Image (cartoon, rainbow, N blue to C red):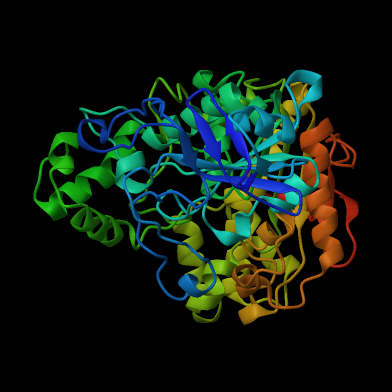
Length: 506
């Protein structure tokens, strides 16, 4: 008898992972062919089969990217794993086998160890789509470790997808939204294979944060993703997409800097390091509030036929249960370390608000309601609500009016990190959702004393939502219930900061 890792038989071949404390992990599993050579700047093609047993014990290659610029690089870990085969995913699953295999039936025994079948016999599945402004991030970020979800009965999948110009560039000779197509390919792989890991392909919940949440909002509006998931969690992102003509400006700006035509064929001939350098230079000064070059989901007529906000408000994915929310002080991740909160005075604040087309009535209400805050902090509160809280409230209201079968739940994360006075900033909730507070990469943002009971409560809510469709509080209704996770114990608050929300109404 030889002790070896757990094995699972997928449609493409047998995988061997690692097991610890009742959780099996299968890492770096290809869901599509490597996007190199003739497949670069093309829609993903399904991964090919392999012979024998494929080792799945280490994270796969990450999509080409550059690290975060200081000071965010110290706060947001972003591992870089070399290799071309970046279209891969990871699976964490509850495992009741011993991992000791004898004979030729290892794969079948491994699948049985994970838990049989699909349908009512299978476990809920959660598929994580990472954020990073569509230019950073990967599934290898330690904060996203899926062990706690598997410990609590969920089969957790995390996905890599193409980023930046290779994932979201706009070319006349390439399909649009390539990175979004990657995500759909990964979800198709999950539907075909997750039962082998004990998961139920009919109980899939997609969840993501920031650019991952924006991606999920687009998937909710995409006919190509229909039927691939039953529930969705949108964390600190909103339904938004650019027209092709607008998004094409970023590609053209890069082409001008590189001195090549703005075509996929020309870009494929440029050294990848030069591409990434040009990408950073062109997008470095872009801002979601004031504009500038960036990479965005685009309305391409196929993956995203129309503006996702309009499509969702008019009933797209009305049958999908939806959990969504923000942190209370999203803006502080960018404004505080960079010094914007201190540098912005009343005059600059007014100029920036005018450029961002913030209604003057809203600005007056926020200033009046926050007399002790600096102009930069008031600007940040307005930015948080304009970009995130108000669009999500509007979507919740539209879903309520439509009377569709899918329930809608809202949350807000308000615990304040002491690190660099970041407060309840963007991305702070991630270590709580994944219950990974003990990791040094999580503590870089939370500090060493983040409340474990709050993490337990938030993590349990996500597990419950994926399992039953109910995170544990009242669904959206005219009283506007929002579950607030901190400061202090979780509590249901009706219509938080209602005067500020109303100030955005036309």
